Image (cartoon, rainbow, N blue to C red):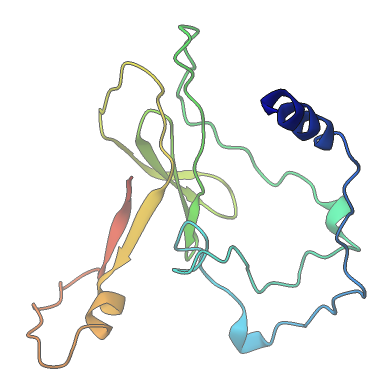
Amino acid sequence: MLAVVLLVSFGWMFKSQPLVSASEAVPVKPVAAGEQQKNWAHWGNTTHGDRFAALDQINKQNVDQLQVAWVAHTGDIPQSNGSGAEDQNTPLQIGDTLYVCTPYSKVLALDVDSGKEKWRYDSKATAPNWQRCRGLGYYEESQAQASLPPTRSRPPAPAACSCQPPTPV
């Protein structure tokens, strides 16, 4: 009996499955000037992780015309020892800065227009195998304070900058 179930299950893997397709084209909604996205501050763009950016500069008609604007090198050199360092992160863009981390837990801040390095942080973290940095976290104090209940006391705001640079996670 078990052999019959396994044989049927194995055969089912090769059966043609129907494709799901849209019954009509989804209309592209133009982005209003006040709704244009400025930052990609979370792994999935929003705190809900929806991975959508309300931008309309790149579309089906011009995507094939895109060209490389710039290339940045982190300085990390892969090792052929089998431990496999890999880039597996989603960069964050805050204003005119792109934040990226390397498999060796270095954080780089790059100018979004030129790719020029603004600054770099080396955590000096080590791991014997499987070097990865899967992403960065971004924290802005003004957003956090706005979400606090009004009855809770708030610490004084820092004088210069209310943001913290991204850190490897």
